Image (tube, rainbow, N blue to C red; front, top):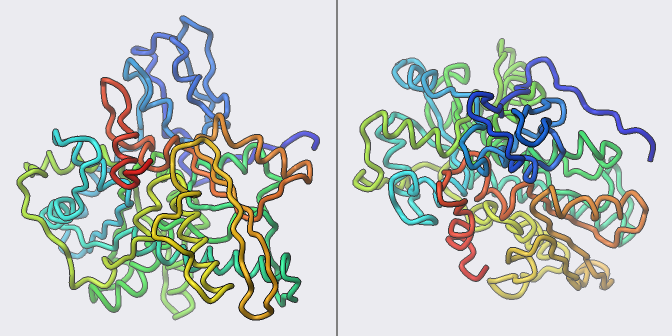
Length: 424
């Protein structure tokens, strides 16, 4: 395909989130075995460094370093604490599904314990308002599923289209490390990425538009949105200057606006530290459901985003229902579930409008380092049989993100995965 041009960072993007402490690094090479892009340099036994131009900011090296030498250098906790003290500012948290199955681990609970209402209770005590990322994930499903439906109707069923459609197979676009990977190493396949924003990036503009005027009764410029994520790459995603939909919207209403959709991001580890600094014990905090908040309502489709196959299953169910007029049979769609590195399936469908029968072919991959490249090389070679491909950079999906708790006896992502998919 010729030489690949590396996408350079934009002016405001955070480019060096993950760094190696030279005073702690032993040069053991463990980090290299987890890096999807070969971004870590240095000979065995010598201090290693991270090449920021190649780094996905995914943090897999961080959570797997046996010496704790790799750090997340972006720490906005004190800034958030100051915002929470400012009576003029409404600080809004949007929390990913994987956070609630990992946060308890930082407070001595069994890995995989679901602590949704305790987390809500702690956020309330800290002074946060909430737009649950699961709510935004439902929005993502409607957008990404509709996009897939339009492509199936056009490319597979032969219906005309009045506007531009991206290429097939369609890639999911929720994982910022995966998106960065495509930009770095497979830029010719960028048209295959779904145009849908990630749930976090959908939550931000909703908070600063509908939330400002209909939920919290405040000015959008006085809303400070904090993403609480299992993922260090989300700190990169939030810093991308193109994510300013709320400000763009308010400018059309004649208002001066210049702010990002997500103001800052903290990880599961960062949130645990904030809770402890405030003297709150997650195990004894009063649970809170926030049942009167329309932005805290969500379906199970958003919940399963946290594990490999979850985005695929949710989008596929939407597409299947719209095309066939019937629900995809069974509560457990087993082809999308489980921890194999690559899963594939064929989904027979009958178009309710025309009676045409089609077979939708899907693939699901997690762990960019080992499992994704063969799928992408098939597409480059024009030999891919698939219509829809989900990719999660981290093994197991978001539950094993670079911002999750670090178990000194080894990563505990399997326990967190089983909390969502007990049949894995």
